[in-house]
Amino acid sequence: TAAWEKVKSADGIIVPGGFGNRGFGGKCLAAEYCRKNKIPYLGICLGFQAMVVEYSRNVLGWEDANSAEFDENTTHPVVIFMPEIDKETMGGNMRLGARNTKFTHQHDDGSMSSCQMLYGGANIVSERHRHRYEVNPDVVDEIHNSGLKFVGRDEEGVRMEVAELPKSEHPYFVGCQYHPEFKSRPLRPSPPFHGLVLAASGKLESFAKNQKRESGTWM
Image 1: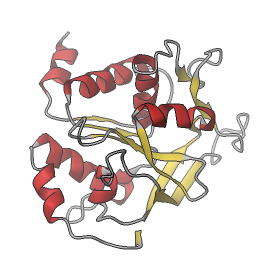
Image 2 (image 1 turned 180 degrees about the vertical axis):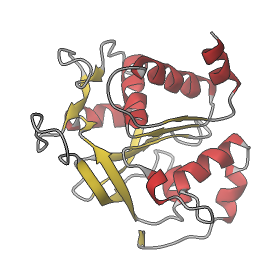
Image 3 (image 1 turned 90 degrees about the horizontal axis):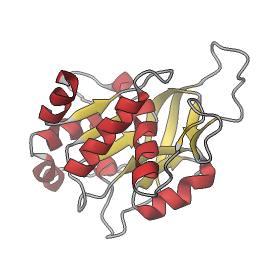
């Protein structure tokens, strides 16, 4: 189709947040296409969850892997409703606002995550959130150990915030549960978006070599 040809012609793909199952299959297909063809990919919120679902289906072999938001009967609910959120009361009950993400893991080859590098090597970043569903903590280790690394987590280490493939496997395959666009500014672009543009233009590696290191928290 014309829509799919546009996807295939892109130098980089953003799969943004959203609600409901309309188009979720296409989000997963876009994530799969980018992963297999090494096209720079940034998944935000639901786009982050889509890359986790796609990876679970096609790499771990969990064919019915899905979000419980879309299939409550799946035998592999890799994304679940957050237990403290009230399903009955809609409005003002999401996980909202600025929260800290801690970069907890390097890649198996010892390299720093691409996302952490883009934040100047900061150990903690403060970004804003807006979601009710999260990666299922029960399957985190299996997915992480299979290659899709959950490099950023909340300060308790329970909620997955950033996932990516190592640079040795993919130029830029990054997803974040938070919404980095909320803090992006014309003269201070959001690091995940900046990384996507750099990767799509073939300049991420040179940028990484010259990136100034920060310590502490990126606000």
